[in-house]
Length: 490
Image (cartoon, rainbow, N blue to C red):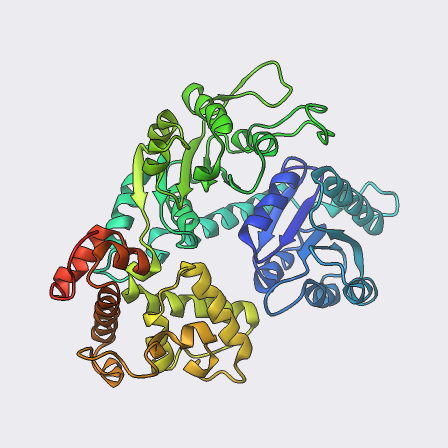
């Protein structure tokens, strides 16, 4: 057990929790909660000295949660972290929730550490005027038991069986491949459209592998310039560049023994690709400003929404790095390629939103489901999640969500022809009859036929419009006997 103290991070965003956890974990025991319910379960164990809570969370603000927590658990020092700094929130936090500090984003790691150190000191002063505070620390056995249970919960959360899909849909092959990848310590490249759930699949691979008890860390390679990305991944020594005020451990070193997920790896520059290739070949890193390399044992899972084979041919991505990353390729189909999964995914997301918003909405009305299935979802699962959040926020009661709550863009999906479906396609009323699987297939067949006719039978253009591969579209054309609507590839 770390003697410095125990900190509870409350944030609904997984990556935000992990970012704060990485900074604090070397000095403190860190517990995480995604919502108020999980946070209350942790606080009930009397383990926590500091609560670090995000202000903007669905259903309940950080100030509201800390106000309630103060009544039941007055001892932990409470702090808010937020990208917003409205004066009313600050005043409410200080006056009503007893907020010790209000930390604004983007935060500096050293400043965040200083704030938490000061908060732990304050906690111990409050518990014991002499400041020794030996009985203010949670017991070694209790804290280890809670941390172990949290790891088990996280492992259950990202099991393959929790990834929602139809038993005969295109995700079956994807998940079968991903399960194979858990058995071998091999680099995996996940391809697929943005928002399709590549990070979720990467987590499932990690937590299904022999490295499950070690760290899983994430970096979006397209979000930072080269120098900062190199510092983030490989670490740096104090003074290595302007703004490097202290030694910093890189994510590769933090992930030692575990897995690093490099999201949007196709966005990296050729100069950075050379450095990444060396790390993968030599299995060692050299922090910026350091004179000696350090060995690391890290499994790399990378992801991209680009076609890296095209990027290689056109000279934007190194061929040797591509082969290093692509040892085990897994393609994640876009939501438009698996409309049969949409009702189940929507139901799962609604449960998640209900928990976050403290609602009890009972599913979707049939017409709303039909329109969700018919929409092409260019933003994939992320866009669907946002749509459901909006529907819940707009609803007045806990009745099933109706089509009138859909955004104009989604609601218009089946109105493309002024409310009347194209000739020779099934009437919209027929989509409301029969088993759900039959209704979904009727909608999918209609959407493909309509798109093929719009593009005069051009399979390549229709596939691009639908977010499908040409091979995938040809398979669906054969399945639904739409060859009369299809003409040529180019």
